[in-house]
Image (cartoon, rainbow over all chains, first blue to last red; front, side, top):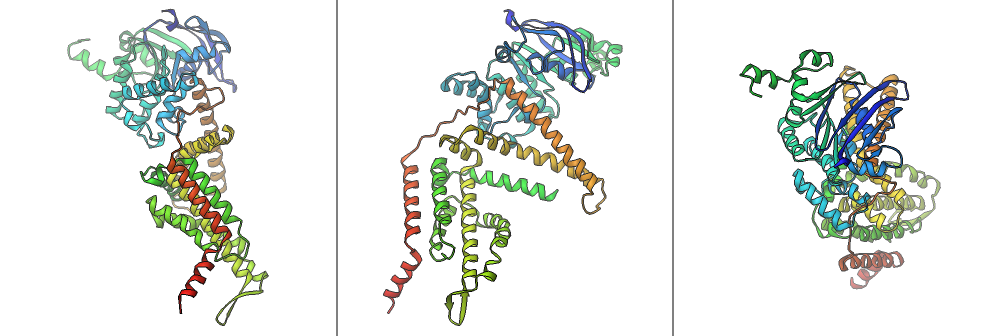
Length: 251
Length: 270
């Protein structure tokens, strides 16, 4: 199915204050791939993500999602198929209750109320928040907020899931639950993160950004084992990978 | 800092109260809004020297407090916060208006004192009833009630968003003031520079957040209108609630129940 493809071509973007955030980024992510986007702070990860559903418009180059280039006209269709979860769950959860937040997207899609209700309850059960549906978001723990934020996007049944820093600030159990939740999403996933240990579990492919350019694009294990590349990109080989290799190299 | 955080807990407590399950809480928000509106209108419409006629109106908040299982002390303390302001409005009445209107034994009470008391009473009543409305309905349900009653979205949605992000803003501000006070070594006061930069930062952060929230909304197909999935059904108890209380308020507005009760008592007494 061609509509789960994300492709950027020579993407360039500078913020109004002149900071060049992206200086020519090209990649092609095909259907069903789970891709990690890693790099130092300020390498351009978040900026890149914001281009994928047209929140930012490239200065040069182009983004294609499925059969459409991302332009003003195709935005509604693009935003329907690209579900974007922002880094701060408080930004994502703006409605008074969890239920209404998860229903926000489907209602905007114009679905009938019964269908909206069914979708919301299904998704809430899937992320394990059905018992909290009438709670206001500020009463949730950080882990619950993160799950709720993902639920708000899943309820639109997107073809592509784009997530910015899903595991930051979570306790180990919440982080594990989140990873398991993301594993259940079988469509295309694009995850920007510093949690290299998590991408070992979730992503077979990794793109490393450095100063607004693609520094490397390949199999996660190959890139994470390349110590020189990692160091140059302000990254570090995850401990789990080192330990495993010392203990007999089973991977 | 302590003040900010206590404001936060106050707000949360009001929300917590509104999540109870009593008959009053289960009423449709529109019923409570409408009744409160009639209450406010009748209480505000009394003349400046009316005192005894206002007394029976305390019945409504009293009944709502006990039926809604609300803590008396907490709400009274909140009303106490507003009283000084209202007191300032009425404080000069006794000076200007010194005609004696009423005598209590040897003591002559001037019109100024009566109108001052009347203002205070009405203030206590209106603020009290407004707080009861929020504490039995919840801010959110109240807003959706307003929306159902035909108040335009432009008024209701900002109210909802303000209430949602008030908590985030208070949290952010209290973290910043804490960070400041930890490094100012118990020096009193803020210092103008620290204060201006702090509030400036808070404004910038707020604008940033507003931008991000807008993006999050756009990403989920927002097109200028917030759609709410909730449906309320008006039940018989809601209609009865509005009718009984409203007609009681209007009756109490036209007949001075205190005087009637007093006269009746005088007749019964030998």
